[in-house]
Length: 153
Image 1 (cartoon, rainbow, N blue to C red):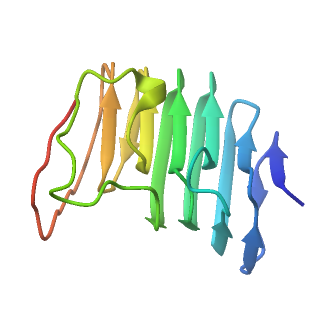
Image 2 (image 1 turned 120 degrees about the horizontal axis):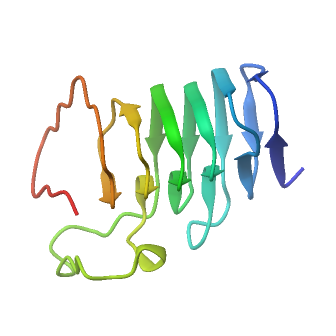
C-alpha cells in the first residue's frame, strides 16, 4: 500500500504504517485519530505524511509522522485542528548551512514538520511551522527549546 485516502472519520490501529504517499483527507468534517499509530514515508524529497487541500473542519490527532518532506501539508482549508501529533525526521535544512530565503514561492518552501498555505482558521500546538497567507492562527502553548532562529513568514 503506497497511500491512503480517507473520506470519513477514521481511527487507525496502533501500529507502524509504511506509506510513501502518506494519507490524503478528501472530505470535509473528518477526524483522523491515529490512536498512537506511526506513519512513515520513504522519500524526503517531495512527500507529505498527511495532505489536506480545500477542506473544512478537519481534525488530526494522536499520530506520529516521520520521514517525509512535510509531515503535514494543509492548503486552502478552514477549521483545521492538529493535536497530540509528533512529527520528526522531515527534510529540515541543517543549521548554519543556508541563508533563509523568505521570498521562495510556497511550493518551493523548505521541508519541515507542518506546511500551511492559505488557511482561514487553524488551531494547533506544534513546533517548526511555515505560515503563508494565514488570516487567523491560535497557538495555545508553544515551547521552542533550544532556539537558534525563529520566524513567521
